[in-house]
Length: 215
Image 1 (tube, one colour):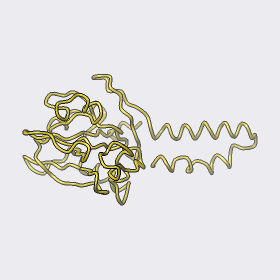
Image 2 (cartoon, rainbow, N blue to C red):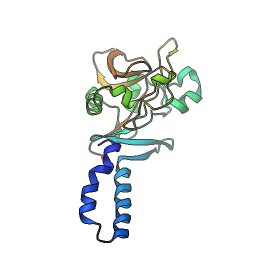
Image 3 (cartoon, one colour):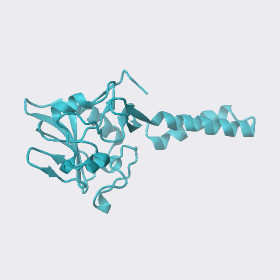
Image 4 (spheres, rainbow, N blue to C red):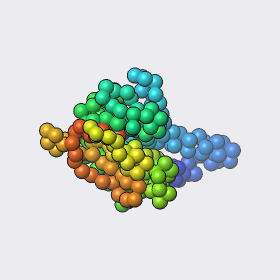
């Protein structure tokens, strides 16, 4: 469930079962509420390089709430500038993206992305984009679910494009020998785009937790 609903879903049970002792009930209320939020958020440390990532649970899915920044062979920082990797994560071609998530995690499929956007609902891009970091003031989102999408741009064999304006993320689902599905969010558009482009393009990666390895 989204974070904003978690607190209220447990209150009726608490109020009905814990409040004979006013102070004890208050303490239990605080402890249970805190535990509920802890189930929705957390951090994960990638043991390959000891980088830590924020996590968020949206519906039944657990996602990294940051773009992956693992220095796999062939991955690049936008404009080859390490400071962009620190902000936006690294950019990967499709083949590398499919193998780069840590053990227990995977590159989301086209279906995984659709599950996320269907759960978030109308204007999913506005709800998934970070509340700051997009070049246009009107381009920022509400970050209603803690996904914190940032505009890392993209690259190809010639150059890099659109950092601060657009974000592109691979899915694991290919369309042909040369193309695969991706998702994108734009500073001036409230929805999440879906398309297929060449697997050699360099896009961001968001890893999602395998269902057999729940938090």
